[in-house]
Length: 370
Image: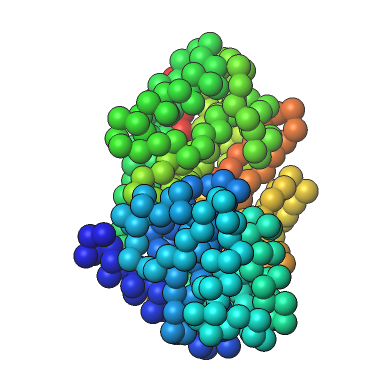
């Protein structure tokens, strides 16, 4: 492992242990999920063979299928407790827990909520007296607060996505299908060393579906166009939505877009360190409601972005999360008029000392394609 990466993951392990001490967690169990990628730089082969990283104040090691040990060893210096298919994982897990001094002990255990249930139960059955919770107060807490290396990659990807969506709108021609545009997006990202994380191209009335699956709908004059897309590069994704139209805007479209833009601005103005995430949702939602479209805003105002395209914190009415510096999340209000069109405008921001910094360099102005 390169020295810079080793330093990064050693630092994250140190920070995790410090956080465990703060909240009184004895053991953290991380499965082959994005949590493992964040903590150890390992994206383990995803099959039915149990693999996990266990972390205590003094120890950290992998429960590792012997089949994968040589490959994974290239990416981590942590010890392995290996098990073969012929033996099964129980013996290696028991040996690992015993070496940690906690086999059958009464512990406070934080388990990766994204881990397979059978992996989690294997561990919890071995620690039957333990108090169990998920990773929100430990590893999840740390993942919410991005460091500058993470921000740099997220920023790079956001700027690349700016260019892609600009080119995608410029490529629009009459009779193109939504899937034609998706293919254009795929090719653009591939030519820049990235892969498409997702691409939802919505023509006309399809924009009224917040999570539309792009299909064979053809573009015609006077159609609204909404494109929600993201790429993945350097282990991190991007996410943005821009709205516009082909030729001339549909009746009432520009007025709706103005309301959505006001909602974005209200959410940005409300976002400050120390404020509840629900306050951001309320700022956007109340703006849209005052304009008479409250029942047409069909989803939360935003979601966190990191290794996962959706992660904590969430900008929803029920969220009690207090926003802090380093948190990265979307602000993406929308209005959806069934049978007509939808307008959503989305930017990703990082919370700074004095408020949100937008990662994108592209304005949210409506894009008129000809």
